[in-house]
Amino acid sequence: MTRIPNTKSVVSYAYTIKANGIKIGNLQGFNPSANRSLERVREIMNELDDTKEILPGRTDFQITIDRLETYDQAMMEAFDYPSFDFIHEIIDPIDILEEIQGPQGRTRIIQYQDCWLQSISKTIREGTISVTESVTAWPTNVRIIRAR
Image (cartoon, rainbow, N blue to C red; front, side, top):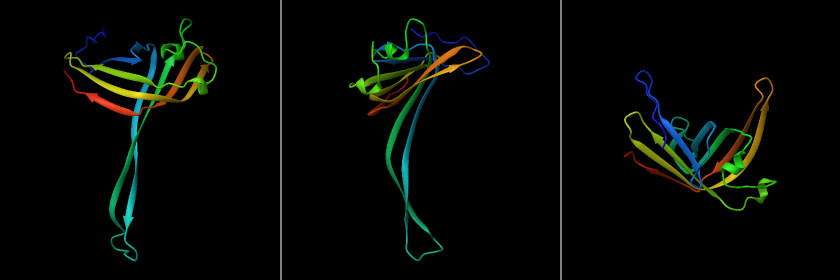
């Protein structure tokens, strides 16, 4: 169970991120995004009213996850891939679950279903000696379960 922050001065949330039902832990960043293309419909030889309409395209979803590497568990192990050498060896998608609990105890759940890993990277920072792993995933579907 995720603990709710005890604060009165700042609106805070408790987050739990799971991959295939396993808590990822030690997150530095969880960045879901959605974007879609837009296309202008124009009329030929109409200089006064150039854009007649804007047509939305399909929506693409992407998640970027940054996590501190730990001695006992690398990011891919947290995703339940116990051993792999290269990204092309991953042939199954994962499900990512975002649980958000607000100060009043209401919980909202966002399911990112059948996420395919697009990229995996590691950053080693000199000075702080921190190792951050990053993964970018593309979900096939996103489902929001309203607060309860």
